[in-house]
Image 1 (cartoon, rainbow, N blue to C red):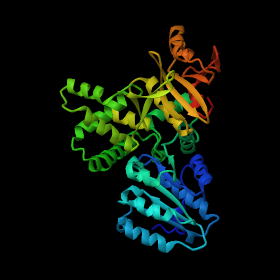
Image 2 (tube, one colour):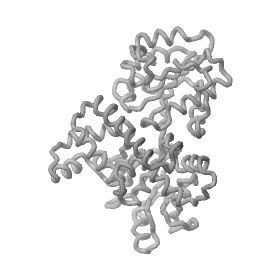
Image 3 (cartoon, rainbow, N blue to C red):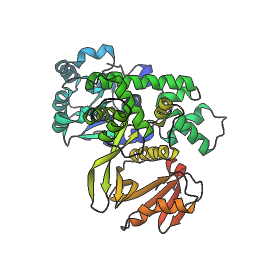
Image 4 (tube, rainbow, N blue to C red):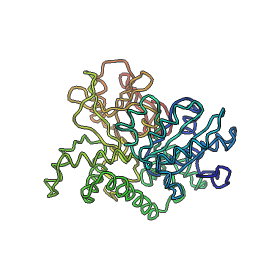
Length: 417
């Protein structure tokens, strides 16, 4: 267990991610389990420690327990019976007890421990995990209605700028230049320490990728074909924002001489999503008001991963922008779908607080024919909800028949739709 009184535990991090801390603070002392999810190295543990520090300002450390199950010293606690015994013995009667369990998915049957702790009125529980399986199947059923998920993503464009400017205070760069660096370096928080060191960044991301693929996917999902898995990763990265299906990917591989099956491709894609390396987004029929079960899009968790996995083959800049818009919408708490209306596509149907936003993303619409093409699907939507066109054309806000055209970097920089 980490001694909360030790100075190293409370050392200042490079960048406080206040939005996530505020979310956790809003749930403090509420009788639900707080589950912090996200890819490896997205910052879950740091945020959890920062939250511990925040709590320790007003709560005695004796009421706080923190275990990181990736630490060798806690390996014996992967026996859930022993873990429960240790936790129960640390609880103080008539006091609120704060229990933090980092990378809890490493403990088989951990849900039995959590279920037993949850029924106690004086235990506030916080969990982190790097695999979506921790919230699937029987576990989700057991914890159903009793947890809230807070998904942690790598640095946003705003956070990246804060980190970059703190490291290079004398670099007076415009927004577009910072954006180029953002899609090159990516947003994994550790990279703050090595910005501009491209080879070191590449080695770090390669190591992160190998850990996710070899440790989190191959070992747990029993996928022995490393080459196939890597091909699927690169294919998904190259086809960010394209409609895909396991059969479509399978047919592409088979035509190039790689034997596989739609079921195997689907298994690999599911594993990539379970480790939060990708997010799968379903299509939504705007007219029929129903979620469609065929063809989805897969968005990568980070564009730096894409750049360093594919090298110069970065693909369509418009699709990279679309991926970043998706991630920003997710950060802001939207429920996101790909829109379908007749034979046309709307890049995003984003729903929040009862309001549906229809969003189209384009690199540029300076040519009239391109502008009309991008507006066509939005014009076809007849309800009165907001419709927005995001582009990299750096110009003041323009309205086209009620459709708002907004500079995409302003949106990524924090402006509302």
